[in-house]
Image (cartoon, rainbow, N blue to C red):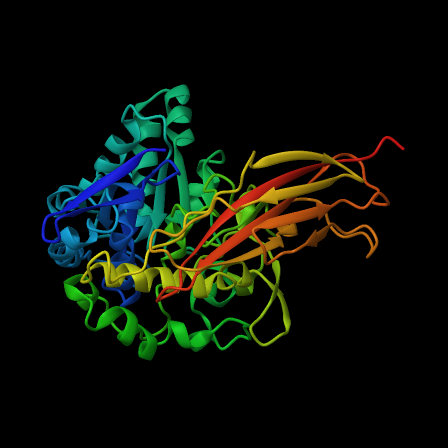
Amino acid sequence: MKIAISILLAFSFVTVYPALSQEKARVVVLTDIENEPDDAQSLVRFLAYSNHFDTEALIATTSTHLRDTTAEWRIREIVEAYGKVRTNLLKHETGFPAEEYFHSVTKQGIARYGMDGVGAGMDSEGSDWLIEVVDKEDDRPVWVSVWGGANVLAQSLWKVRKTRTPAELARFVAKIRVYTISDQDDSAPWIRKEFPDLFYIVSPGGNYRNATWSGISGEPWYNFASGADTSIVKNTWLRENIMEGHGSLAAEYPEVEYAMEGDTPSFLSLIDNGLNVPERPDYGGWGGRYEFYQPRFKPYRHRQEANPETRPIWTDTQDEVMGNDGRIYIDNHATIWRWREAFQNDFAARMDWCVQSYEEANHPPEVKVTGEQEITITVGEELTLDASASSDPDGDKLEYHWFLYPEAGNYWKRSWRSFIELENTDQTKLQIKIPAIAKFSPPQTTHIILQVTDNGTPSLTRYQRIILNLMPSND
């Protein structure tokens, strides 16, 4: 394993910690920052995790809430605050980009709303830069994280289609992955219709209450039932754990007015935590879970732009989750809020990193399950998974929790006698039994998640996903 070595001269010793295990995602952010506080909140979190990404652009855009202006200046204010804490962040993990780099990739989109900013003569610094980013000789896809309107992306696609061959356009489109926070201008439905092969994650339309992403913090605003802890997305918790006493970057985090960080799910799935698999939205992770299908048109969910979908997209689906109140919840918001305690604690720890030494702060455990991460097993067989090699960089005690994530696969309980049995789910070793009575054809898959949490302050969680390919018996 590669290791990063940080020489802390002030204390005259060497700290060794593991490098990120997941390939960094290339990321472009389109933000209608200053339309309300949540974009600034999300940018603070994004920069606190910026060593997990290769950030290619931060582009100020318009949206339905900010129609004729952009706020590049606000991006630069927050980046400047990040620069003041970067040295301290580097004491905890490697790879945080320099402030100057972020300034160099901060750009402006066109100050027009939606499709009024798409077409001949509508190029902007942002749309031209996005084309340059996608054109780079880099095999990794470019994740376009859309926090506001999408017309910068729309203009880039419009221009490439006008100036290149169909084959060149297809190669360009194939490199892009979009995760957009609902539809905040009329260019978003246009993009999905005109570029049917484009990878696109979205809860269509402008009815935010029904959108998957609102599960990050929606209860204080939308008042729908949730089994998640609502206290950790409110201003009281945020002041204590994020905003106050955590340095210059945290000081740029504004108080919640409507809902906390509505844009953050668009990049939570790119964080290297052992659970997230960005290219498989159906696997589920901190950014939620989505399935690929053509959603049925529901006018009441499309208040801003009434456009039926013309093709399949990655969109809303459900998880069945036990809430903190002991009730079962089955909805799309649960695909995000089920992880809320973990991602809020993780963010709080990173804010501590902005001002604390390595010894004072907490750091996430390293999860290691021996053997392959994808296993083929036949009905009637037993399997043992061993995570005893897991460790914690701070020497904290670790708590283990193994659980099935059936929604991420296609094997579901047919009857109580055929369900997969997990034994010792709170130990380092897990015994799995596939009942011989289980009947299915063709082969099925299911996912087992190991969740490891330390007892530091705040407690931090990392994961390991094991995919089981279940083969029917020959009987």
